[in-house]
Amino acid sequence: MFYMTAAVLATIFTLTACATGPTYSDLDRVATSDDAWPVDLPAYSSDDLNPESSRLVGRDGITALYLAVSTMPNGGVCLLVYPDNDKWVVGCGTDGMSVNGGGDSSYTVHRDGADTDGTAISGNVDAN
Image (cartoon, rainbow, N blue to C red; front, side):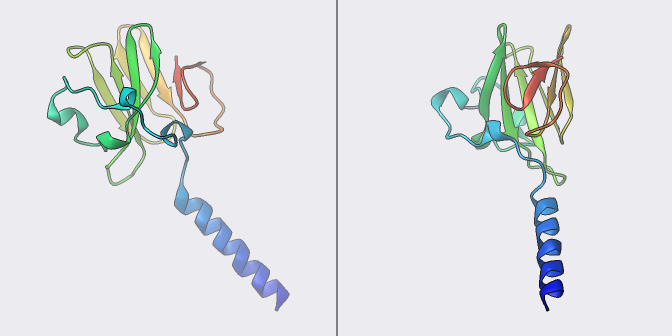
């Protein structure tokens, strides 16, 4: 009986770990007014994400970086690279995705605890 119980618990633990997927601690904190999705962006800028989940995760010079939860079927997160209301880009994907911010700027989003090679902007975003 003990072996069967241990096997069932191990299976439940494994399935639970798989079901939760990667975690992004940048999204865990309570939102502040600084985290609001920029109002000067067109409505379609947030088509694939939940703007209420956005968090300002840092700045790279004048470029603000916002992380948000994706609403796409595969889940994941979205990164807004926002130097201003004319030169912005949003990229959505899963762990390890990169977003080119124009020019020489590029950013990688990674799950908590991932090994990274870039310069940390936040716990989940690196500049490359």
